[in-house]
Length: 444
Image (cartoon, rainbow, N blue to C red; front, side, top):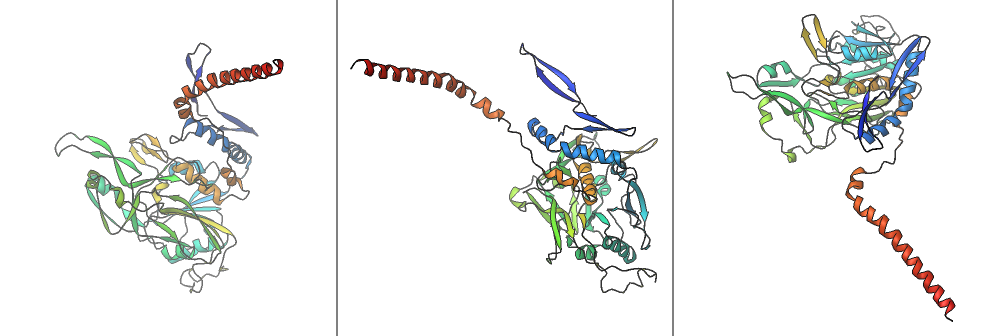
């Protein structure tokens, strides 16, 4: 349970600090779990965080009860075999998901039944082209009602090359998924987004041969995304840190699919086509606001409805090694989420003497800030696997009618004078009226 400090004013006017634990411990069949009830978003005021915590009160309790009372955990798979993020790069989110799922690493190798045991499949940043046989397995998994969470990088940028030098090349990522996602109503654009609302990176400002001196500088290729108020997935989360993200858009309008934006850029962003030279020297140039003229570029989409197979009217014998199976042309009502940045789910990994050290997902070791990446991914998985409507509780609004402290301070003297003078004036006026009436009554 996470403690917090509060300021308490005593009768003599002094202040004291107290440490409190705003939470609860739920026990079930010998197991117990701590539920932290106070939400802390650094971008919000204390009153707003209290209001947000009250809104999430019911969701947090029910989520903890479900976690404790589930006797057999469902299965979740991270896809492997195409240079996806490894077990270290997704280690922190894997640990958090293991409280709700039995997590596995799966290579499908064209086996049409390889994904059948899993309720949710996460495809995290493939860098090699997926063969058609593996795409068919994923397609039929979706047609059977399986849930897929896609984290796809349309553009490849070698960050290590950028850190060792000053320039690197951004080029198209050959993941071979564009045609399949297009049939599911999603298009990924091979371009990079720059945003004035961005994260900071350490930059060496010393001259060659001198002692390195690092300072933090804004890097427009690392946009910070704000959560959308209407989405139960991203609502009321801290800002989301991204790296070299690309635009995403919807295609098709047959009415069978409902598409909802989950994450968008700030009002001050723009896109650049690839291939593109990315240089650290861009930090020296301050962004010109009129050049960042695009607002709310989508980077994550929720798609719900009936999906058509991407392999309709295609010969299948060369994809499934000649094995027979029941091919499904469409799915029941299903849902998937597509994100155009794999770094949202990637945690930092540092080498240590005793092995690899995995940083918490969303933690920036340079600024010591923790962004909302982990909560976002957890909400995505929960929404995809939500059969009882639990995530809809996150859309409920309960607003406390808080006083505006700034206005109280600014208008304090005026209200004090009002409370002193107006009642006195009313009393005097009432007395004069009473004397006037009395005088007219008894002088006739």
